[in-house]
Image (tube, one colour):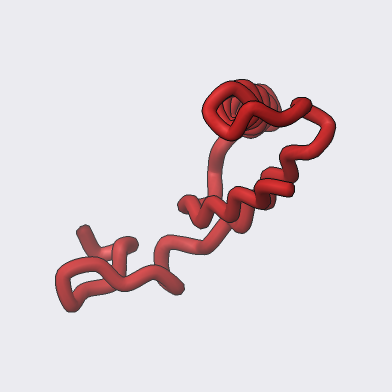
Length: 61
């Protein structure tokens, strides 16, 4: 069933990650009309100096 991949900058707390997973799961389950247990959310935390935006490293922005 649905798999949601989210790449985000490192530094969010466990509570923030938990809330993100909960909210995404709820929304995807509602929209896809599937049970929450069928939704997988994968969070990939990336260091800002490994993330480019606008031709620059995010750590330099």
